[in-house]
Image (tube, rainbow, N blue to C red; front, side, top):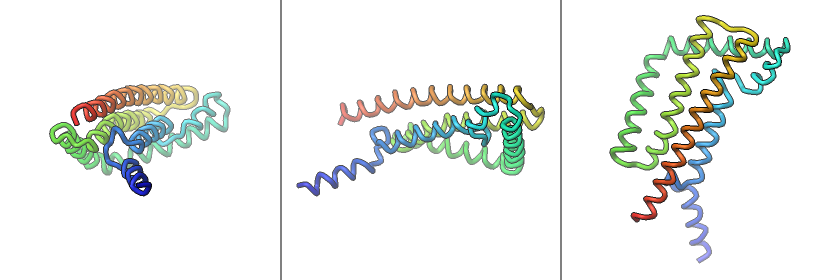
Length: 177
């Protein structure tokens, strides 16, 4: 009987029931923490150090921003159309699997991927804006902080919606089955 309890516990731990799985919620929290910490490839701690406008941290920030802006713009120029089509196709497939076929794993991935796509668009737009009209010093720091706030707004709304939908799914699954 004891081995059955361990088997049951392990099976529940790795189950693909998305909204009742600890692994899904861990992935959601880690994903949004990483998305909020990195703006166009620049870690937030570099931005915090540059906020005081000390020469070396500011130069580090401007160097990282310049490198990442050029990298993002070049990648977008080379693969942008293909990536847009691929991401659109993947989100469409996930949406159909999620809400037409009611696959819970697809619902979980879609609810995580759709707002992340918005964050990617915000970062790509910022990269193109900084490529066309580079900012320096305090103006750059302010612009990056504004983008971080918008990223966190998207993350908060997404986390709230995901939690509400997850509770709805967990409650409806236990009530109807």
